[in-house]
Image (cartoon, rainbow over all chains, first blue to last red; front, side, top):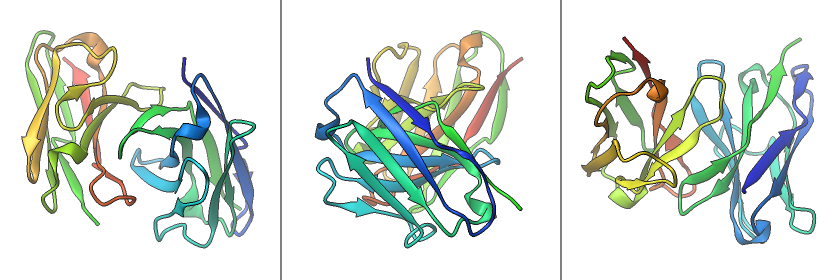
Length: 117
Length: 109
């Protein structure tokens, strides 16, 4: 059974940093592209980051480029999202998702980030 | 960026009723790149339909998808109480800049 379990969310002040983690199991992690997708308090879904199966390629939307870094450890079956220079508009539920072919075939339960002073 | 617009944003249906949700793209996309998700209250999104019309594993046959170009739709043949959820379309055409529709909240009468 595919399982994705996120952790690391919390309350952070504007300008602060935080690192999210996602533990994957039930599939060959190193065979899949992985993603972070967030859901805003208004329930809008936004793609946040992509990493290739081997970790060599990463992609971000302009809204987080230069502030967020996605990475993975294929030996430990873990996905990460390092976030810095956080803004109030980054407040959201963050989901780790496995990549199908240009879609997201499995999602974790999410971890919440709140950016507030 | 391809913008996806869903309609309606909210709707209520009676058990047994047929419902249709539409997803309109700001530019034409291949049907291979349009997908649908279901998010039940309190849960994470779940893949429902991929590549316009293919049901994900375990999805009941009352769900179906169709469309092409800039116009796509999700249909529930007969509404059931367990279908109460928010439904999102997603495009994978502008790889890797994936975008989602704003969602359609489906309630039961």
